[in-house]
Picture 1 (cartoon, rainbow, N blue to C red):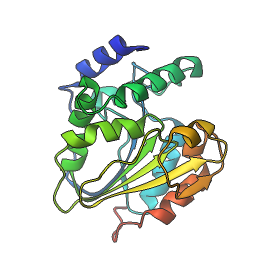
Picture 2 (picture 1 turned 90 degrees about the vertical axis):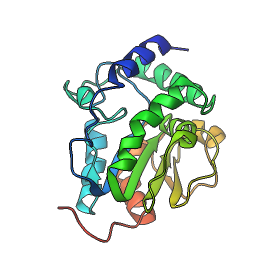
Picture 3 (picture 1 turned 60 degrees about the vertical axis):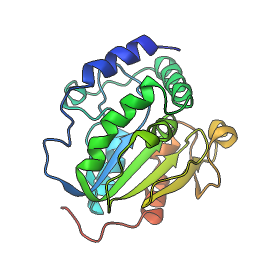
Picture 4 (picture 1 turned 135 degrees about the vertical axis):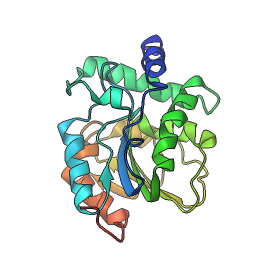
Length: 224
């Protein structure tokens, strides 16, 4: 697999690193990005991803300010965009690895880092799963310990793979870019919304933010 050794080393270095949510008080509602690992230097969000979370924060969702694996260590370097020629093969390979199912080391690693988001959120968790993030979540699901009373909304944006059985209180919303031919032939169905953009741009398009806010009811409070 492209970059599997690098991916193993990256996640091994983060296995015992403190998660960004573990130092916080338990939140009533959180929103987080779950995507493939484009860089093995940092997991800082792109400016476009941060804009999406900022829009959700206005509606009462507390943003998780870094991407998978959501550790303090991954948040330290400044954001540097990974060239597409490097990022695309890495994300494709990670999606393929996740599609091998819950028995892989990768599924175990995803579950290990995702569990604190469940444990440190009381009422509502919103996961924005772009591309490889969707099969990563599906692979990790059997390894997760659902939190009683926690509602989890999963928004698959250009995700690849089928819809799995979900724990009680979990809901899935599927969005797809109108020019996302890759997800059209390999993603989950049915689709709840078609939004402008292709496989890369649809996830952060303003229309996608509006669709998420329409599909996922805002929390009944506002952490502002």
